[in-house]
Amino acid sequence: MERGLAAHTLEAYRRDLQRYAGALEKRGLTDIGAVSTQDVADFLAGLREGDGEHPPLAASSAGRAVVAVRGLHAFTLAEGLASDDPARIVRPPAPPRRLPKAISIPDVERLLAAAQTGPSALRDRALLELLYGTGARISEAVGLDVDDLQLSGESRSKAIPAAVRLNGKGGKQRLVPVGSYAREAVEAYLIRARPALAGANGRAPASPALFLNARGGRLTRQGAWGALRAAAGRAGLAAVSPHVLRHSFATHLLDGGADVRVVQELLGHASVTTTQLYTLVTVDKLREVYAAAHPRALG
Image (cartoon, rainbow, N blue to C red; front, top):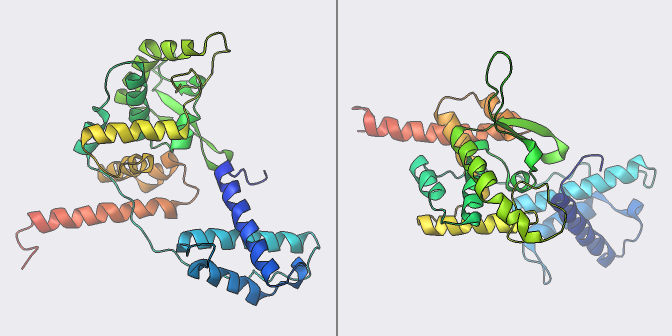
């Protein structure tokens, strides 16, 4: 509650700590104050090696579990439940640096054009346009309410650009501009499709959600995934996920000359270090263009 973590993160930490408690119990440890640094280190090693009940964990998953264990021991020390923090010097394994995957602009256009006809198709087109046009996480997109949109308006001096208020990790909100393609797709959905979907719930109170399912309720993450998967299949694209669209949003902005700090704000990253991974993608592209275009690049 204090850190404003997402429900999925909390559930992952809960599973990690239950596994840790089970490992300590097998060692005959029932008092948290009796746990040693070696016990914590052995638990980490066991995560990486796996056992008869669990497969080996990747460095990222093992690292998350160690973070949960470190948080537990720091808490017990702060609350006076233990006299020492045995997990303090146990470091999570360093995950391999993976460059974000992005698809090309022509592939994005093929994906966005792959919607079929009907109310659900207009919803799916609006959803995909908004994901790519704002860089929103899938949870942020399906969590949107109609009131989070600002599609048009005017002040005394100038028109107000379209924008959307996204609720990100840790309860942090950010206002992200909405481009003309995404705005038009969302407006078409709101006018021509959402009323029909909203009427599917009969006399139940109308949902404030922007994206509705066929029963008139809020579209789930699984439903949004299904819509993207279906569109990707029709477009002939493989391995396209909501996060791929987010990566593509960031990569295409940087390719177009956007400042990394601006992209950080648009993505809602707490640290610019995370955003800087995308600059590695663009550097690779620059190298490819240089190698292909400069007369003395190769030889």
